[in-house]
Amino acid sequence: MSALKVLIADDHDVVRKGLKMLIEEHAGWQVCGEARSGREAVEKCSQLNPDVIVIDVSMPDLNGLEATRQIRKACPRTEVLVITHHDSDEMAAEVMDSGARGYVLKSDSDTDLVRAVEALSHHKPFFTSRVTEMFLANRGSRVTDPAGMMRKRLTMREREILQLLAEGKTAKEVATILGIAIKTSDTHRTNIMRKLDVHSVAELVRYAIRNKVLEP
Amino acid sequence: MSSTRVLLADDHSFVRRGLRTILEGTNHYEVCGEAADGSQTLELAARLTPDILILDISMPPPNGLEVAAQLRLSLPKTRILLITMHDSEEMLHAAAATGASGYLLKSDAEELLMKALHRLEEGQCFVSPAFDPDLAKQLFG
Image (cartoon, rainbow over all chains, first blue to last red):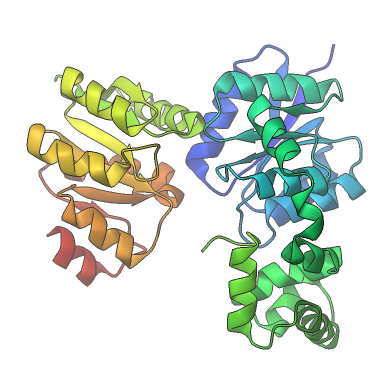
């Protein structure tokens, strides 16, 4: 039987090292690659075609949730397990929204992570009971969450650009990173600001932090 | 030469495992214990009296800063290296006030952990290079 290929994406070397050790202790599992940002995770997923990717939410350039959306589109066979230190109901809902099929908190046990990878390797979802309870308890309230409704109006590309702008990149830098024309990048910025009803980069940054697009 | 005994305190098991892997790759450091929250850290530190404590700031209570402040009084010989993802100067000020000897960003951990530990063993302090060196010197000496 061929080995289960796992890709690891986290911007902290020490976390990747810990995850690699944990995964490779399991017979038949192999870490096929590592990524330090969401963008690198998307690229490596396409190149390496892993069975499972273990991905952190808070990463530079492209956060783990946006990366997950892109991976689910480009590599539908790859199952996504999100790991995060954000222990909140909003995050649980965001993770489910992104198309990930598993969600483990960094404070959960090693056993939970191993069980999650195991479940996903059989294309079964995995959520710890704590996460499932959080999600079920808040199912109703999300429908009326104005920030969530507003975010829904942004396209995948716009959410990607929102993070880059909030990280302090100019429209020109965004254009270079994404390989698009400066004019297109400018148009995206205008549309994002209009849709979110914000009028300055400072407001955009505040919005991005409040909605966990990036870390404070 | 006897090994330096290190206690690891972080609520994220992957981080503890990563740190342990780095330390066990040397013949010099011995991981004498692991703690996943502040209370466990205080208990293990009192029992094991490690030479060095690698201590995460954001942990289930008491947090790393409170733990560091308490241990400076009860175990003055244990050197404390705070490890964190917080790169703000406010947090650096708060960390210095606890009497900890080092402040290492998690993003620097793999590259600079050894350097930080050596500095602490030599009786010096260590601050991640992302901070203004003058400020680091002023706060940690």
